[in-house]
Image 1 (cartoon, rainbow, N blue to C red):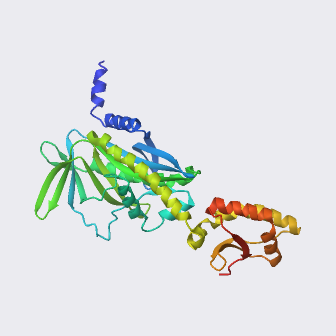
Image 2: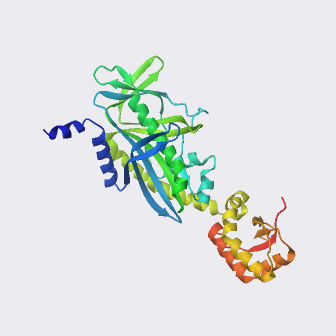
Image 3: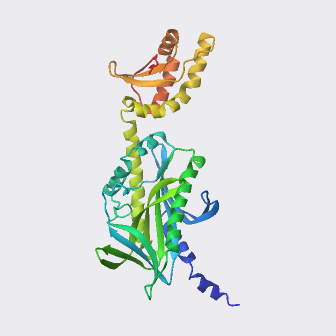
Amino acid sequence: MNNEIFAEEIKKTGFVLENSTAQILRKNGWTVISNKYYVDDSEEAVREIDLLAYRVRKVQHFDVFTVLIISCKKSEADAWALLSREANHKDPNSDWWPLHCWSNDKALQFQLSKEETPKRFHDSAQANGVNDALTLPDVEVFAFQQMNKISGKPQNQTAIYSAITSLMKAQAYELSALPKRKKAPCVYQFNLLSVLDTDLVRLMFKNDEIKPTSIYTEHFLTRYIINKKEIFSRIRFIRSNIFSKVLKDYDRLHTSNCKWFAIECDSFYRDIVKDWKKVESLELVFKSEIDLMIKWRLDHFFQKEVLIGDPSLFWSDSDKSLHIGFDTSDDVLSYLNVNDQIKGLVEKALRKIFRYEGPFVFTYDIPF
């Protein structure tokens, strides 16, 4: 048996491409997970994604993960044709700045929930020197075909469709799985890449003409229904022979992510006690931090169980201080305001949860 034939034949598959892509990622400082399996709940099938790569850095109190989910495809016979037309960036039915992030940090969750956040994220990345990873597409890819390199005959779209759906479903799975896995404060930002070892052609439709152009990379903004919810995602097609060059921009994206999330976190805490929505997002965390230590001291001093309810925080312009409201009696409030131990513990909790170091008083809870 001639073992060399196996080595030669395996080169015709996509495994060589997958391995070389992984090696490029590792060489550039990315941690790589190969052939990760996940369960496709919608079809009750086990699927895999070729490569998952990430970079991570500690920023303030949380870790920033920049994640690349990568599909690798090779075709000796067929080129990948992307059927395109001029992009209408004012189309109200399209999302030109999709952002897929997850965080278990309350401050970052609040900032990410803002409607204008995706556009601000993209603008910041561009300002930080991210050139192509998040560029606004100048064309709209509306269809795709695998086409024979010799005859030009359309074949099908199986491999392209498989790459797109596997990337989007893998991203959806990771986003749903993170809350169960991650306990330490962190934030993840996801990017979907289709790396291909074949020719990539743009077929530009304009009026009655179709203009073919060989290209090396293209951004495809697509929508997909996952778990009965419409999802917009950016998928970037990249020829394998330029992947090393392209990867440098994702290095810059990670640097930009670390800077941007740090700024967003600082923005959340700036004058936080004057913004009731921000305060409300952290009130339960604050309650869990002070509840037991206050209750123990109150029960001990009054020699009975003292009920004070949940704390409500609100800023008073009249005395320029933070009011911590409780649903309780006059004598309990008086004790809270004179007990140095309780005040010291609450002061520490305010500094930890809200980054607040100003004056505060205990008062009656707001009734409405």
